[in-house]
Amino acid sequence: MKIRFGISGLGFAGAVLMAPVMRQHPDAEIVAACDPNDDVRTRFGEAYDIPVFSSLQEMMDGAQLDAVYVASPHQFHCEQVLQASAKGLHIIVEKPLTLSEEEADRMIEATEKAGVQLVVGTSRSHDPVIRTMRSIIDSGEVGRVSMVNCFNYTDFLYRPRRPEELDTALGGGIVYNQLPHQIDSIKAITGQRIVAVRAMTDKLDPKRPTEGNCAAMLTLESGACAIVVYSGYDHFDSDEMHYWLAEGGRDKKPNHGGARKVLRELEGSEAELRRTRYGFGGPISKSMESGNADRRQPHFGVMLVTCEHADLRASAEGVYVYGNEGVREVQALVGRGAYSQGDTIDELHDAITGKAPAMRDARWGKDTVDVCLAILESSRTGKQIDRRSA
Image (cartoon, rainbow, N blue to C red):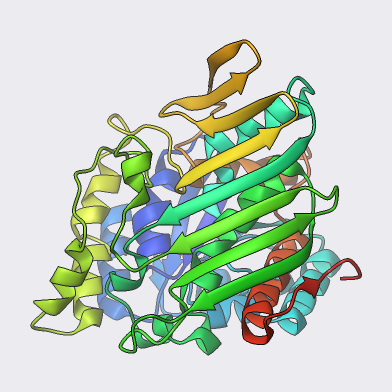
C-alpha cells in the first residue's frame, strides 16, 4: 500500500527535507498540505500539484488521508497529534515529540486509544549507520556494548532563527532540537533505556540566550556509559573529523565562522533570511529536490561505540569495525527510500502493514523528552538525575 500523506507545516522540515523524499518514496505519496502562510502553501501546492489548506483540521476534512506528517513548531505537536488521532490517521511527528511529560502522556493515550501508529521523526537515529551498528551488535560478534561516544560541533545556533527558537521554554536551543538525535541514536544502537543523567549546559552568547553547548554522561540499563558532547557555536566543525562530509552526506568545504559572518552582515531580519535560505524554493530546497546521486550516508558528528571485541565508527559509506584482527568495513544497511527521512517513512509503513512494530513510537518519544528534561535539571542543580523509576 502507498500511504497518502498530508503535510502539516511547510517550513524547513516539512517542505524542504521531507517532501522531496516522500514524493520519491515507493510507499508514500503527498496528497495535501497545510500551513498558515498563504504564500508558501500556494507555491508548494502549485509545485506538487496538490490541494493546500490553512489549517490541519481543514486539510483532514478536505482530503483523503492515511497519515499526517506533523512538521509544525514544537508547541503545536501535542494539539495536532490529538487532532490526527481523533480522525484515525497515522502520524509522523518531528522531534521532539513535545516539550512536557504531561503533553507526552496525552499523546500516548490518544494514539493508543485510537489504534493509530505514530513514529517520531528523529531522522539522524534513522540513519543507515545507526541501523548497521545495531545489526552488528545484535549479531553478537562484537560482544556487549561498554561505551558510546557522541561528539558534534556545528553552526546550529547561528543559522537564522525565529525568536522562539532561541527561547528554551518554547523548545529553542540545542537540548530540544539537537540532543534528541544523539539520545535516540544511543537508544537505537544499544536497545537500552537511559537510567541516569549527569550533565552541564551553557549559554555562551547573551544575544542567543538559550543552551548552545552540552556535555553529558548517560548511564544505560546494563551499566554501560554514553558520553554526549554538542556545541552549536560555529567555531570548530566536527565534520573535519568525518571526511569533510556534511551532516546530510554531501561534500563540504571548511567554513569556520561562516554562519556568524552571515548574521553579522545581515541587513534584513533573521526570519526573512531563514525564509529565503532555508525555506521552500530556496537554495537548500532546490538541492534536496535535485536528488541523492552525489550523496553519501548522513551522520551526526563523530560516534564511536566500544564493545567487548571491537570498536565501531561510521565510514563514509558504512561502518568500520576495529577488531582483534584489524579493521574491516561493513556496508550500510539502507532502506527503501532516500536516507533518513525515507527510513522514517519505512518505519511507519512497516508498522501500519504489520511487518514490524514502530520502535520510535509515542512512548519512545516521551522517554527522550524526559532525558532532555533531566539534562536541563542536572545542569541547573549540579546533580545526577536518576531515571530508574521513570
